[in-house]
Amino acid sequence: MNTKKPILTIDAGNSSIKIGEFINDKLNKVKIFNLDKFKTFNEWLKNKGGHNIIISSVLNKEKTKKIIDILNNKNYCQLNLNTKLPIRIDYKTKETLGSDRICNAVYSALTTKTMHSVTIDIGTCIKFDLIGENKNYIGGSISPGIKLRYKSLNDYTGNLPLISNKSKATLFGNDTLSCIHSGVINGLQAEITAMILNYIKKFPNISFFVTGGDSSYFDYEIKNDIFVDSNLTLKGLYEIYKYNNA
Image 1 (cartoon, rainbow, N blue to C red):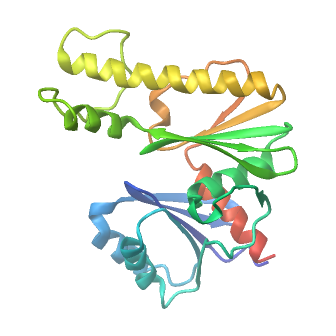
Image 2 (tube, one colour):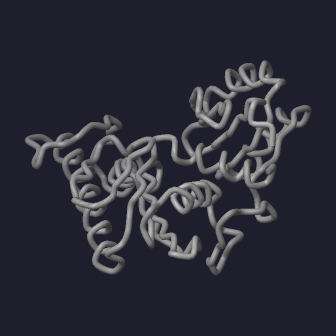
């Protein structure tokens, strides 16, 4: 494989499109576009004619097609059910498994030094994914992320406001906004910590790989192998590209 030719990895997520440029087997640059800035993304991508491209998308078919239409005159491939992977997928409904979860699992499986590993993706949703000792994807869990929890409190109550600020929270609030913020952030912190401890209890020889746009709002002070990398999905996608172009 010619690693000198730049590779673009495109991670089309629920809230943004994230792009990694790999040169000589190293992540050289990362670019992020909000989904409502699709025209800007389109213009930027038009100037990337000399790159090989691989895309992972969790968007619906209509939105994914808009991205694919831009790539039609470029050398690209899309991660799908037919893509060869360096791990085995032991999941009952492979067709419903998000491609971002696959990318995360691939990277952790190829880099972990422990028998088991778990990826924790903290974004629109909180996703835990377990990889077994034979580099096999086993399964995981999905729960609402920060923004979804804020929105549900506003949608399903008569008077609670919709808030959007994301930051670390104090233990308790002294007005409605700070109480909502405390409940959402501290509740998620407790959930994440409890899940990590439960995995450690069941699989003592385990490591954790944390990623996602909202991962910086939480603490990971448990004494275990915990690695935080905001570009985990891009790196996993790159490993899949290499595996298919070796």
